[in-house]
Image 1: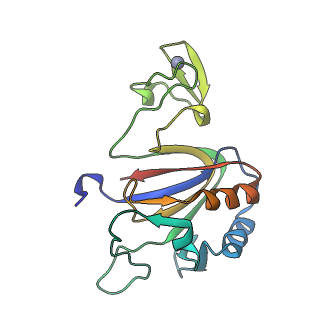
Image 2: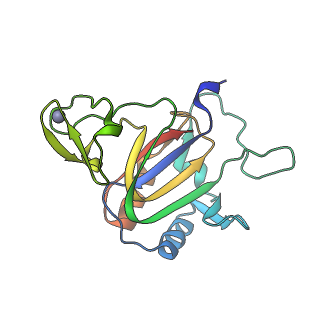
Length: 182
Ligand SMILES: [Zn+2]
């Protein structure tokens, strides 16, 4: 099932640059029980917290989600925190959707040829837009802070609005989500 997607994750991120440092992010996410202990050896990887299943709701028949590694289970659901000095673009490598221009709302085809570190050019309306203002259609996002929840196919699990609200309070900026597969 879903072979064409490859390995997918759900990503949550603030819409604007967050100046919160990594130790603060970790302690805030532990406070709201989204994450629990760090997984040893692998840096910035965490087991899910006890409120995880309230925050992220799996759709349809509950899949057999594994939250701990075991000898016969290499794939399991855990949380990675990506924290960068500069905003980065993460886009799905499979099931790619072209972004939409924030001005004319048209799809920007071959966007890879029209992108800089911070902007994307739309030939339909001759606009140079900021990457974060483009609509990445829930298959990409631009931020310096991402919470990645591994082993979730697109739309298989949905973050609840009250989780996004809690994250917004932590960083003082709105949060959104997308899926990415590779
Ligand atoms: Zn445009």
